[in-house]
Image (cartoon, rainbow over all chains, first blue to last red; front, side, top):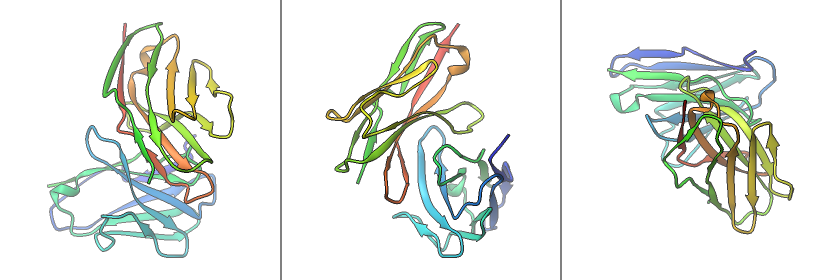
Length: 111
Length: 115
């Protein structure tokens, strides 16, 4: 069965609203999770490293105030896209520290 | 910074035949992992095969095998007896061992297996 879940799998929102995406580790305690973004027909780009109980570490060029990450428990990390705009439309994927385990992804469409 | 290059944007192969996907990488590190991932239309990332840089023996997983040339920084994936279900995007990825454990991905190769 799945080791990592994401919710929702697909979300459509209006421009200017905020959207929260959840990533859950179902079988393991995860002190570290990773968030990736994948634009259509492109590769995965690491956005940030989510650390349980501390601040996330963002990759260069990723706006930390726009992409808020909260890793409040050993099994849950959330990514909130604040004031979403159409250019934020993408596929967002989380993973555990073990590179074998990826979530199924969340498709975000901003109208 | 590490970079991963996949020079074949698209490839196709006939069912039951063999195909090789290319990947090169650039790093100054000596201890690292290399991976091949499959991303089918569902977009779920699936780990196909993993290679540890300090191991000279090429990794194999059933129909999937790699040709790891450390000096040349080359890491190709061979798929034998191709099946229709192998149709997917394939990504090569690098991870520095003992570091932040971040994955750096190549741009991917779209593989189509034709009946």
